[in-house]
Each structure stands twice: as structure tokens, then as C-alpha cells.
Length: 112
Image 1: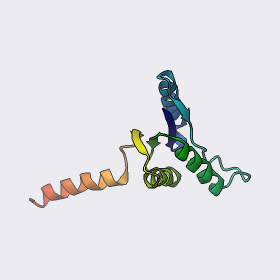
Image 2: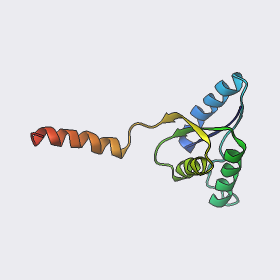
Image 3: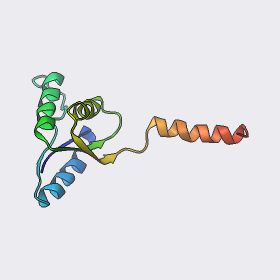
Image 4: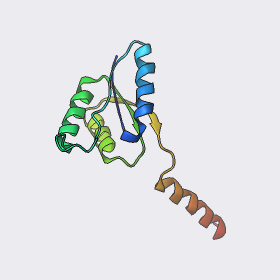
């Protein structure tokens, strides 16, 4: 199977480990073009390169910190192209979780 691995730059090591595991199972993989802040590689070029990888793929795996707008854009492209996805890793510590946890504490405190 052809698999594109998309994700946040900070999780490159996780993406490389995932790639190794998937290729060991016989899959063909492609890693995302990442934002390395070089003037010769624009954001448009990165998104176009990742779109091409998503179009190529049968399935798209995500390794995401829930903060990277580029990885969210990759998810939206996979959705729009009706690609099957797998969530290999999603950072659990985000502001939404904190807000939900705080809400539970407030409900307890307020007797609800």
C-alpha cells in the first residue's frame, strides 16, 4: 500500500520510526515536506508538495501536535480527497483538554 505520513516538524523522529515500521511490513511510504524556514522553500511549495504526496497515497497517517497549521492543512486535504486516514499519534496535552478538565472541576464546585 502507498502511505503518506504527515505531521508536525517536532515529531520527525516519530514519523521516521513509523516509516521504518510500515516499510518493514512492505508498504511504500513518503514523508512530508517540512517547514525548515529556508527562504528558497515557500509555504506554498510545501503545501503543494504535501498535496501531491497525499494524492499519490492510498492512505495517510498523521503524527500531529495539534498546533501545526500545516499538518492541519494536510488533514483537510486528505479529507477533501476522501483519503483513508490513520492517527498514528496526536499530542494529548492541548488547551481543549485543559479547558474540559477545568470545566469538570467547575461543575463539581458549582454542585452540578
